[in-house]
Length: 377
Ligand code: PLP
Image 1 (cartoon, rainbow, N blue to C red):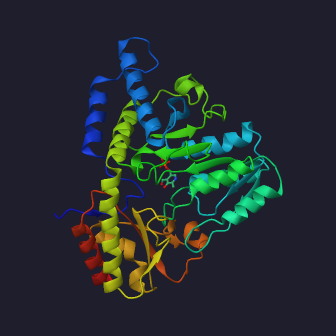
Image 2: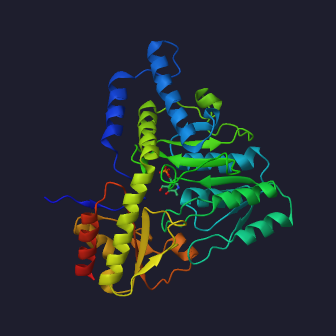
């Protein structure tokens, strides 16, 4: 059987063998509870604290600012809900193209906790309106949390989190960014961005599922979200996922070391993919930003003219051995337009597919996928 081609790396990534090796080793030898004071416990504790150092170094934070969680979804819930419940936040400014774990959390707070919510305008490339952000913040000084993702997971557009952070700082707003799609892919330095919170997830960078972290700037105090024992310095109760954290650390370490070479390789693939598509398929359109500095290199959302064939593209590619995602969320078997594509005003009569790459993909993969698309359309 020929190997399948995986181009859905924005959904999740294959776990690297080096990561599996570390996790296997921890599973076999380091089963101690990190809260136990004996040698088995201390060994497990060391694994977690070493991992924390690696995360902190990756974003230039201090180790006391990193808290491990079960996912970026949990990290985002913790920050957004506890900012409202315990930090006096009465207004949230965000964008309509955030991931559902941010979007639905904010909608919940608006509905059940009387929080004032403002969704910023987004242009057709997916950029938020920075002038509107500044204007809204300058209008009044109600305690505000601004939550804006770094790279969008459906179209790859990168927001200028440096500038957003500076605008928030000018008006005393808290700033949170969902950096799930960029941590380990783009340099992020929390010393040079005025940022209070950010979130990360291991499985987007070739680590395991079910582990993430939240960065909480040391000037900002949030109480725990999950109550119980004193794990994560009382911030996140529950026995730590030592195996997952060890895998996350290895994956992060490798992402940081190989960031530049992976980026160059993936950029080459993306550029080949776009030029081949343009040459061989009529009227394709590329969603999101075209500029390599404001578009995450691992995501390319492609919009195809409407036809019976293009409607079934994700399914037909799957049958042909290629895993990709639709730009649309699939609800009860009915394809509905995604909130992101709606947010950027995507032409609903066209069909879009998100292709997302990793350093494990090859030029050959790209050529095969383009040829399959040509055959199908
Ligand atoms: N935020 C973004 C931008 C994502 O792409 C994802 C995953 O799809 C998440 C948050 C959720 O991450 P996790 O799977 O760790 O909960």
